[in-house]
Amino acid sequence: MERYARHLVLSEIGGPGQQKLKKASMLVVGAGGLGAPALLYLAAAGVGRLVVIDDDTVSLSNLQRQVIHTTAAIGQPKTESAGAFVAALNPHVAFEGINARITADNALELVSGVDVVIDGSDNFSTRYLVSDACALAGIPLVTAALGRFDATVTTLRPHEKAANGTPNPTYRCLFPEPPPAGTVPTCAEAGILGALAGIAGSLVALEAIRAVTGFGDGLVGRLLMIDAKSMRFETLAYGWDPDNPLTGTHPTIKDLSRHQR
Image 1 (tube, rainbow, N blue to C red):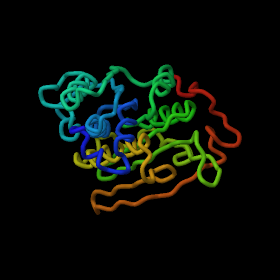
Image 2 (tube, helix red, strand yellow):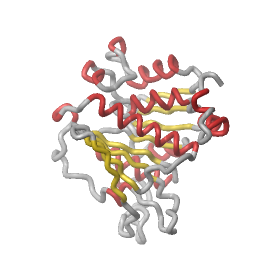
Image 3 (spheres, rainbow, N blue to C red):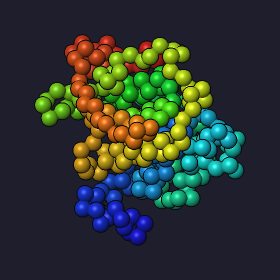
Image 4 (cartoon, rainbow, N blue to C red):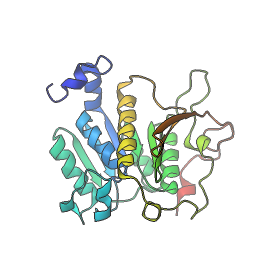
């Protein structure tokens, strides 16, 4: 009770909400710029089980923004470093690290075993794979992306309907197609503001906590856009596209075969 006292006195969370967090299971895709701060706050919030999948190792250049990793962890698998951090922060959280990539072969099994998925990946192919898998499995997804000085966050629940009776939108309703290969520079090529990753990752954690406890209005059908240069936060509303290939009127995506390599 002392550990979660500041949650318990919030009427919107309280004891029932904290118990929901304790019973919740979440999958975090990527323990990097977005996943690291998200894991920090999810563990602190008392999420009962955290599953993290990442096949990368900690490097010195990560430490500018990936705040759960330390200098001593350089060279370690990120899942191992993340697990040590979570255990030190909150030993009551069950942690499972998977040192691998999420693929078309394992995605449905991974997302189906949790209550909420958080996508902190850094490439479009993984974002589309994870969003398609979550839609097919009927699992809520919080997804975010980082630019040099900008970030976006949204929540996807296409397995549910909006208040007007239409289905909630999918990732493909918002972004029908990924940009052509090579048109978006990588983090290593373009750079990134470290503290921005912390802001976006914290918002991702907030959305995941909201998805479990149910308080307030989340980002379903809304894209939160952060501009760190001008310190502006704007929200873009978007809706279900009947022509989207996943949950449209004539869906063509019924499995993850198109993601096979």
